[in-house]
Image (cartoon, rainbow, N blue to C red; front, top):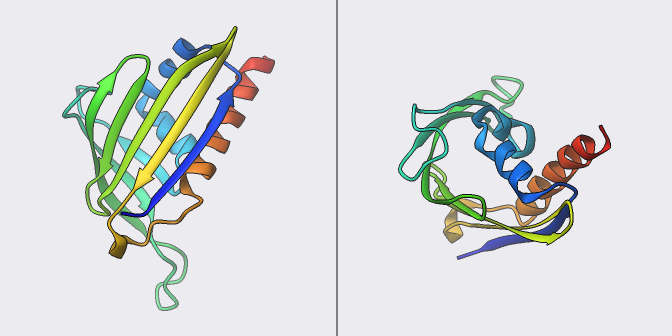
Length: 142
């Protein structure tokens, strides 16, 4: 199964990073292609199903990228160190591990895997963590 993996040091304490991740609407701020999130009542919990809106592939007949509904299911949630989920339609499995790397710092390790025929982009983990890093950097400067 193809994998995309990235590591980054985030400029925020692990509890703050977790609080950010646990807020459902924030997924659209850092995950590439997601622009809308509708969580179920459980929030960030094992078995929770969030409806998300992603940008589809551009279509010359339709014009700009259409909005595509998708579901993610949370498999494992261990506050504040690990969250795993699956994009159901695309069958992308995601694991995000957080560990303390120093005072006011968090090491984030993100792995995304998918079946060969699902076209996983190798840069997706790096792009997601880069966005998350930028958001944490902004919070650290305030």
